[in-house]
Length: 158
Image (cartoon, rainbow, N blue to C red; front, side, top):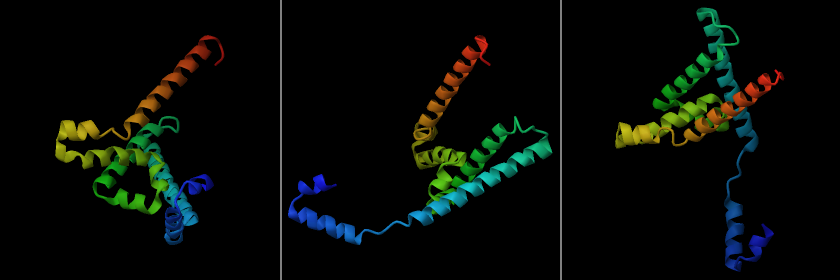
């Protein structure tokens, strides 16, 4: 930062000091606590959905993950459509964006934003603009892990 200030004119340095004086301090601890509790609440809801599938649909703990994740993503998409998830995101920050529900929000938000451009070019073309890289690297990572596991099992490692 000091090297940047050396290159500034005196007027720019004054403006920088004025700007720092009037800059609003962010409540970092408060934001972290909000993110922690909202993210935890989302995880508790996911755990409740898992128990629901185990109890009512006879899933096992090994195979209940996929329907639970699909349900959580679907619920976040519905809540985004009604505008609830966006308000939750403003309140909780990363607490709502980091869990898998943030993925559903990212996909549906882009689709809602571009719906006026039509279903194919608007919704279809922009739906995975933000979440596409997540899908791409997730599928690629799964492929690499499966390849390593297959090679290890062929060589007697697993």
